Image 1 (cartoon, helix red, strand yellow):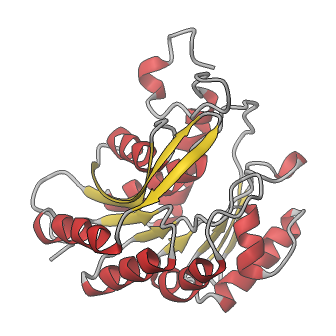
Image 2: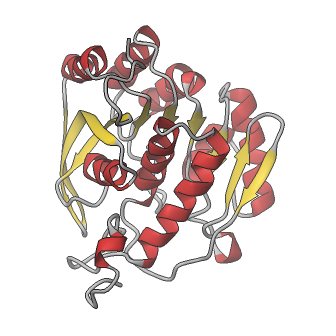
Length: 278
């Protein structure tokens, strides 16, 4: 039911939190879907009060409300791909995993939001355990950042070789089908280099480095772009390569707004000629 195409427009679903500052979460995902000419649907897991300076408050949605949103979309519109972002707690993670299986949602991209790019843990240990055991094994691909990969693999990551070792370990121990360890938080030449491992093929994916402080929402945007490309029919590795290119372009046109870390420029082709974009 959920994979039936009822129109000539591909559909993707984001299951994530709301960012009141508009730089990450549901807001970033929907803009990314729109850029890729994919109809975006959503299931909001939590509401945050945040801006470019940080997060001031987080309120979780009841897991029943998250389930209702997912079912409403899948049983009527249908989705060809989905992604998860901030799921916040054990109850929501378990409920989402159950819906993915019961509704047979394909092309699931799991951004295992556990730790920020600065290393701050965002969810508790029970939620991390639920992510590891319930959601990661049913994902088409998971996209941990450096610190999330450290938690999932048990390996301290300071080099590309350690990123590769972590990808192997996560694939084996977490029963992940495909692992993309992101290097956005890596030092030096490792910044922006991602490691792909599917159990057989190990790929080092590189793009140009972009020098900007305005990087808010890069993880959300990458996973959303992967999901959008999958919804359009791309194979997984192609979807990842194209998503990396999109994020690099969006970083090159990041928005210098607010007093802190601004977001990437999701709609950069429309703003390319304006001098107020970085």
